[in-house]
Amino acid sequence: MARYVFITGGVVSSLGKGLASAALGAVLQARGYKVRLRKLDPYLNIDPGTMSPTQHGEVFVTDDGAETDLDLGHYERFTGRAANKRDNITTGRIYSDLLAKERRGEFLGATVQVIPHVTDAIKNFVVEGNEDFDFVLVEIGGTVGDIEGLPFFEAIRQLGNDLPRGHAAYLHLTLMPYIPSAGELKTKPTQHSVKELRSIGIAPDVLLVRCDRPIPAGEKKKLSLFCNVRESAVIQGLDVSSIYDVPLAYHQEGLDREILAAFGIDDAPQPDLTAWQNVSQRLHNPEGEVNIAIVGKYTGLKDAYKSLSEALTHGGIANKVKVNINWIDSEVFERDDPSPYLEHVHGILVPGGFGERGSAGKIEAARFARTKDVPYFGICFGMQMACIEAARNTAGIRQASSTEFGPTKEPVVGMMTEWVKGNEKESRASDGDLGGTLRLGSYPAQLTRGSRVADIYGSTRINERHRHRYEVNMEYRKRLEANGLLFSGVSPDGTLPEIVERTDHPWFIGVQFHPELKSKPFEPHPLFTSFIAAAMEQSRLV
Image (cartoon, rainbow, N blue to C red; front, side, top):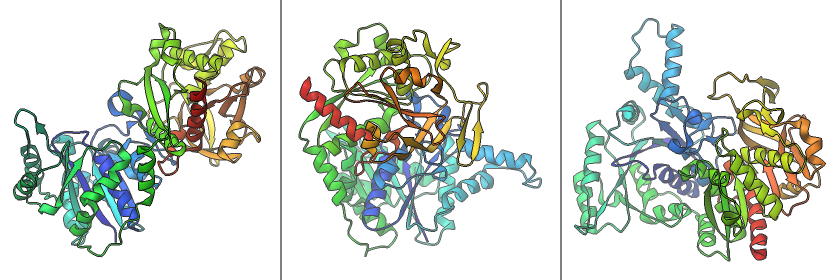
């Protein structure tokens, strides 16, 4: 039967619960265990699909089409296990399902309450489908003390009693701040956080204490004493230079050992961390560096492009180079010449996005890359803007635009109204709901034999994850192809464009899907590996 580790946070948010969960999962995997990671989000949105990227960060899309929290991206990157719809749930989803049942009369007249109905729904979600796993790591979003998180904390408290003895452990992540004027690391915030957790009936087995310097032995003893946690189970989580050092660092501090000890396991196999050591070695000993410009509209919050920046790092790992990212707000190019910003970069990446704001700047970035022979990688919206740029400036279609920006005589990019998913045809209306109505999840594509992308993938058949509502209009294919823009990847039925590439350019590729979602440090995505290799070549020319 699966053992459960519940991961909670205190003091402040953004301490790295998602990374801690992912790193712990990776090390337990390295010991030979089968691990599953799940995320409970207390917000009322059904999913993060309609939330602002500048508030919530990126939306991570799974193979089966779920729009989920970005922490699931960490889980996938660190463990290699593909997440699915059943690995992330929100308060909004739970209430939506409960109220639908209530309307159907399934509660037989009972009063529907937080306890037991909401908490039971959370518990059922947590324990469902775990028969094939040794450990299930469950991260609770937010911090202890948040009002919206209370039903989740109550549910995991109950699970501690519902599960067989020795099958639940609690890991609490806190902050130990350094006060420069006092010259001390302070234990009180952690004490208060644990007190809050204990007041709702949860006693942590392991404390993971985030800090910017080593915790003195006296402070460790103090935390152990006042938080009622074994001294060996007070684990310091020091800052590291790369997130891919975290599994090695936390293992070194004994996090996985203490979690296993909480379950009474003292004979676990030693972990094989060779893959992580190799990744770390490549990160810390690069043989060169390249500069990549990301021209986007959500550059104010780097987490809006989390998987993207990590995939670029993976491309650097594959090529043994350090990738320096220059974040550029695309709106800048609507008033300034892009040359001063882009003339020293070795590659230009234009990511996904929604809406007209910033689109003109992205088109300018595509034009600069095309005319200056700089490697260009357009993802989703970035591919669409590259096609509009090509239509306007190489095919003579001056009014080329997207219907996303309003009515146009030349809809080079338009809204998809129907597409095939498996054996079924799905359709959407322009005035329908926004949430969960995009083309979501993994879809196959057929690549042109002999094309650059077919060589990169080493195959003519691929599967990639999508998240979009608009697409390039195939009626313009011939006119664009006559001017150097090859449609080298299409849906198996030939109706939807998936990849474009320029035949008159050293490296210019646009993809309608999101390849960054499938990239991992020990298995970099081939497109990012190739893009960074092209950037290295460019660096020799600049």
